[in-house]
Length: 139
Image (cartoon, rainbow, N blue to C red; front, side, top):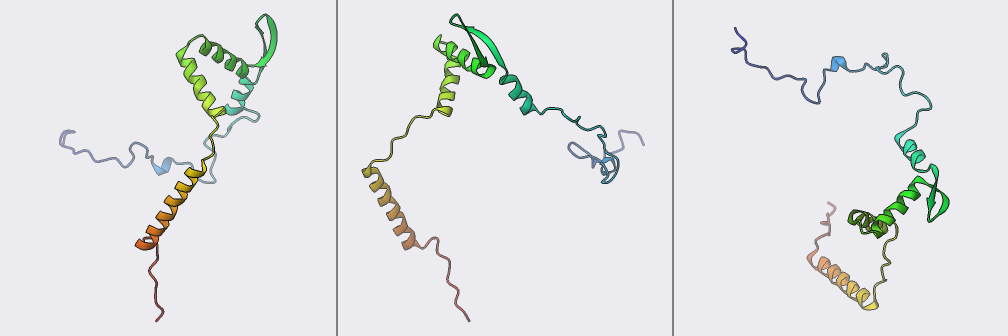
């Protein structure tokens, strides 16, 4: 038989599936014997260290010490004030996230309307008996 005549058999070990014989055996030697080195830092720690590092900058003729994160916010505000639309959109998103607009409490009329709607719903539910469990009689 040639290769053309040989129908291809579907492989059990395709994408996302591996041969169980190649799996790490429980109790056997580790597939990563050295592992993660002690004292190595996580992504989160590296990020915090990088952005919380203090630097000295000159702003309006004065030397100021601030973190890189603070400087980034200052630069974003400067660009937004200068008319950069992307910076303005980012500042708007940050404003909504960190300084949300105050929401006025509902007026007494709105509360009364909500209460009336709720009472009407309760009455309808009771009339339709939608959420009642069927009663089972004892034998």
